Length: 149
Image (tube, rainbow, N blue to C red; front, side):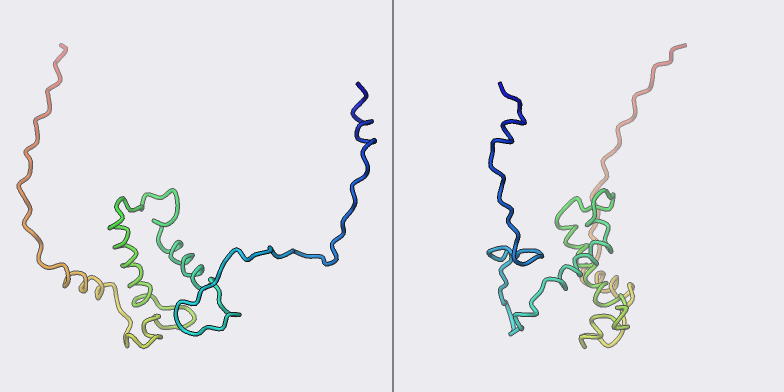
């Protein structure tokens, strides 16, 4: 059996292809297809950057969206409640740094800045009176450990 180097030398050299234009080459078809849902936006300015920024802010503000945390939601309904509470806090209580008012005030929906007490009062007004709790189950007495004297 001849050495491996001889097999490599017998093959013709590969042609070198030099691209005419340097830089990244766009894919033949776009990966993302853009659809206009409402309004009449300029197609040159359609972007997901605003949505991605909002998702990042939500993930950084609520630890239940990050991994390896004890503040996760065990039930989907509870997770939905937390997202709704965050949404109200973000739009009505939190002061936006560049707007210097809450987003609801900037949009003209609200005239004053809410406090967390306003959200609690809103939740309490919708919850109704507390229900009567049922009877408690009696505890079983613990078995006594035998004395080994």
